[in-house]
Length: 151
Image 1 (cartoon, rainbow, N blue to C red):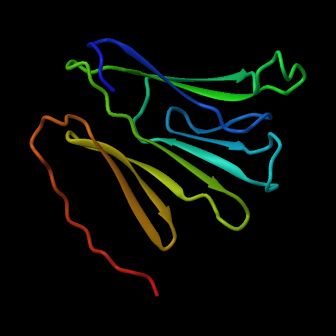
Image 2: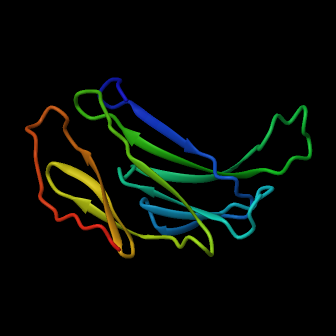
């Protein structure tokens, strides 16, 4: 995103969820049932904010054009608010992971240091790393990891 220093960004996510959003870890991980006319019963979606927002509001929102669908139920909306950096830029990374009884929700863990922020996503036996550079103009950084393919 690009703008001016101090500008505020609102990022809206609208999971197909009528009956609530569980806050697993505030400002980081949220899970909602996909219960708004679901095609697969028991499906949920977890939203992981790899870039930690200033705040997250959870509100009800109209699901359809109310003039054409007046009795259509409202659904949950997550509004994440971020501030632009001193250069008027902001890089935002959000992970949306659907899951059910067959595909279990992975474990999300925050990663952060002076160069990047991100998340490890552990879905045994696999561990993925999602990184977001804090300052794209800064020197490059590197890390080393072993790669192995499970049998």
